[in-house]
Image 1 (cartoon, rainbow, N blue to C red):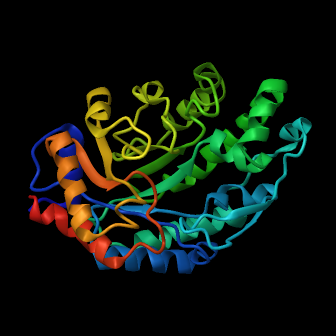
Image 2: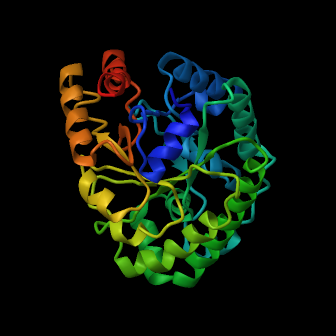
Length: 331
């Protein structure tokens, strides 16, 4: 039997494995506000299901709270929080942001949560930490994509000033993460679809900052995953040269499908299951059918079984078990 790292490394390289790797991840509303509680919930989830890797999933506000943003959880099934206070209310506010100290405040708490999780995981279990792209962070600083897009089109230089500050804060946090035994990061990109921006706008306000971050990652990180977020068709081709080993997107809900994505991307494709149907609303039998379709699309090579985004916090345990067991049955 291969170790988890061996299974993932062979999958990334397109080599034969003993079985397809599998992992699910979710948010931990409430628990994600305290380091010890986030660590305990993450570790218990891994002990219960023995995933091939752990994705550390803080609230999206972990990287924004220290700028002055406020949020709360109001029962969203994805476990995401509602933003109640934003710090960019006019375009000039982008220039007032300051680079954050990663060892203090919410960032410092997240570093502590990461250390607790890594201390509690067996050495052979890889873990990756969620990092939101600068543009995704900017979206919540300003209060939504509509206002951000307006600022991009009316005050581009001020937005660039803000994005540079956000990027520097992110790089400093990553430098601290680089001192741990993480296997890599889960780099979450938002707004990279045609419902919000043009390709030229993403090339100008997204890609340069993405690459600054990805090209600065620790050389020891061997498993970095890109996530293209959104139920609309993503600008998939813009990301095919990003320096990551795997890519995750809403393949079942937005496209392109796994076969198309695998033909374009040289590393591993991660997905095959819709987080709503059947994972949340369906049955174990429906899940097994969707797993078989994903295996057929990918030929069981360069494929990691998962959902296209976070699972719902109320997903039935029987469905989660069905996903975990499906890779053993199909091996």
